[in-house]
Image 1 (tube, rainbow, N blue to C red):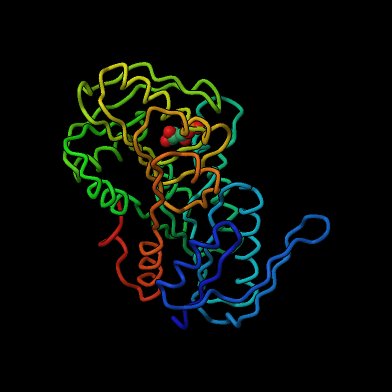
Image 2: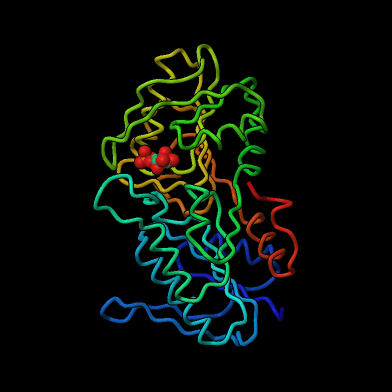
Length: 314
Ligand code: R5P
């Protein structure tokens, strides 16, 4: 494989810079603009013929624009004769639409997988996909890293003492178990039902949280409805203290307002999605941890055909 080239869309420039620094290369020169009618234009100022090209883009808000930008980037690299194209998608949007759980609904995560492959991606590198089986939506290699080592290292540094790991819904129980194994502590699982896109109700909890510090583990905080409800329930059941951790801080809708007034002592997320200044200022005890070294190391290893799984895979 010839030279490595790392490019970035506009979704998360700070993270892209950090990843490029880790890899030891400047970001590939390119011009992304909008035509007067809003369509996206792209021009590369680098020769990529025969190169091993990576393009970093989270498909976070505005998700449709960022997804389209990524597809255009991949098409452009393919037509410029890059030898291999890896789409590095720290936050993979549309992932929650991953199954047909009622009639007449799309499986949009699969559609996005098809779009990326058709555009010309040869590999995908992502982090904490909402559901691990999304890897199977692709017929190209997918490396699904985990933010867990970064988040647990931070949690260990907080010196919280004995904790009970709480999964705010059944779907995330396996992830919470991984944290419990790493940090020590019992596991509790909440029976959550989603009533709308912005509201969730926590009905019951399997496990004991009385007089304990609760460490809540989720993959995404979007409207914060899930963590808020889970916090209400664990406090009702006698929890002493609540710490929340999630890989992806989507923080949409009323999330900032909700987290700003929630009975939560600490929130830790990673930088897969850039957080607004408002979020940083208003959410008390919010910590944003960088996963740039994790992504950078994975890029380095993929480029050199070295094992990624031995270090990071779930
Ligand atoms: C759901 O399955 C996810 O793991 C998250 O719990 C959910 O996406 C969070 O959404 P919100 O913050 O809007 O409740």
